[in-house]
Length: 348
Image (cartoon, rainbow, N blue to C red; front, side, top):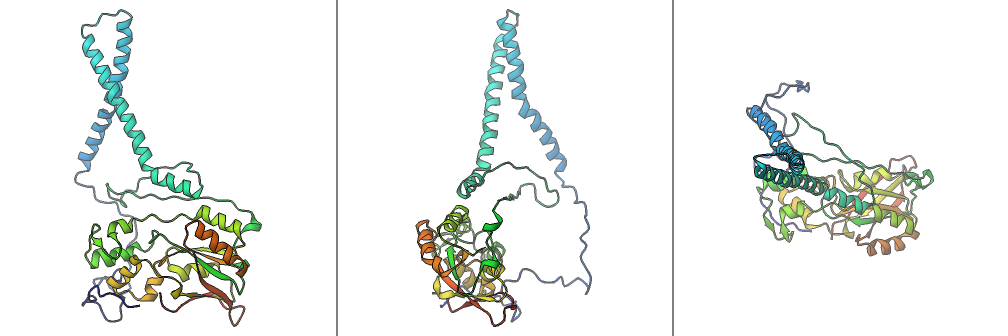
């Protein structure tokens, strides 16, 4: 498959080196010298005192409306009981303003919480999981003041007799692929290095091959397969499942294969989405390196007995998963040979 010419390789790159290396050795470091990983307290930011003072002021500004709301309410009760106050109008005005701004702050906090977890809640709904709670942790010295990181974990329960894995896989099994929705949150270091740093593209650049901007493509949400996979398992027997994440197709699939078998996958069975061929063309990334980094359009790989293939393909297609037969499992020469995955042919 011919690739479009996206430009010449870096003339400063040494022949034979990858065109997208993630960093070179420090030329000033002596041979054998190791970097120091001991904790060093970061230098105090020059604006830290101002930020601290403004934070304290912000606390008082935040609680002032609630104080006015409370004190005004108490004064209103006393006025209603007949207590004489010469500034009754100002008290009522302060009470109303305090109440209004207090309610606005409460509404704002609720909206921030709702918007902040909206995406997480939507993903939980798709997966059929419950969002039980969370916490906020500070990482001084790791994240800048305007940066944040979100991490999550899930826990599931399965009967031992229903566990899928390598012990179920047999020669003659078929590998069925489920399409990915895009990069699936893996390989962004390579994509960023090739398209943003080396090619100098902006996120709002319209890319004809993508049919939209680069930023919109990179923000494509990762497909959540949980409910779909559970439905497929109920449809027909499945021996093993591999989620194709970092490391690419072969490196993930081999983890669910037993010793003594080989999975042969046919590249001509699918065409990778444009984002993958774009990265390869712009960065002059070798095919094997690309396959060891990105999912190339395969989100999940199911290893199933031959008799399950037709039923699984029908069910997966009905659920919008765009399935196809990716390859097959065969026996190796020796039963003790490590499991292997081989990709053959060229993409359609």
